[in-house]
Length: 124
Image (cartoon, rainbow, N blue to C red; front, side, top):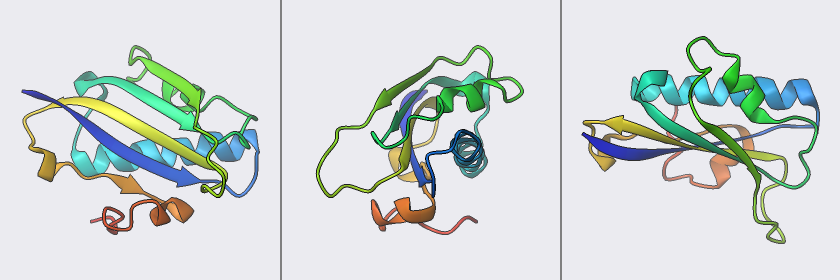
């Protein structure tokens, strides 16, 4: 068994609580589906937001999903690099798995596809 990191990122159009929470859930569900993991497999989730997003804690949305109450979640602010992608939510999901690094499916949605076009494959 290995501990692997699964990267994910998405963007929102507005600094709006509902939009931030909804997009976070969509991103997490896509990561889980593509990688066939469940909350019990997950060690922790590190969540970052760009500084222009302060209307909600994305962890709140994940914590409300069935079975996610005990998964450790942490939110932080992304490094504010000039010219970086605005209104971006990033996830680093640490999961226990038998999969190799090459079998992990990272998820980039919306404008965040620009961050890693090499990994932003369409959903299967």
